[in-house]
View 1 (cartoon, helix red, strand yellow):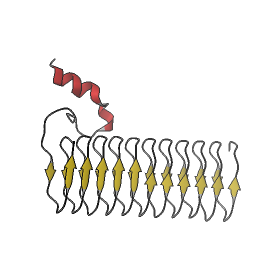
View 2 (cartoon, one colour):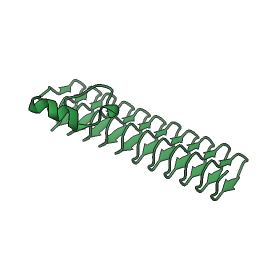
View 3 (tube, rainbow, N blue to C red):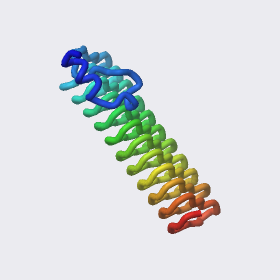
Length: 193
């Protein structure tokens, strides 16, 4: 086993990357869009006009004014989208941002994910602050943390806990487990259903 093989097996767990990238190999960067820049990156691809990649490895900024700073295998494919750090995260919606974590996807317009793992913000102005396997699917829905929570309702909020849902307009679940706020303007502070 050579030194390069040790870096490959120990650099990042295989489950975080679809391919077994070699983050420490000397591979080329590609800056093919107009006014693009790549600084201090390995195997970066900046193909969108005015796109930027700063550091990290195997990152892609492939739409206008998109950027990726640090991390591994980050993709900013929405117009004016940004990925900062993390592993295998994507910002695909226009003006979307993903900061840190792993395998997070910001696909809604102006969506944001601030960390955690396997979270998604699928609709316009939606967000997830952290936790794991959370999904903000409603317009202006937000999940602060926890795991396996889903905010379907427009203007809905889940504070944390696990397996909680907001299913209607202006619904709220503060925490707990397996709670569902289904009626318009309904809320559940905490508990276990």
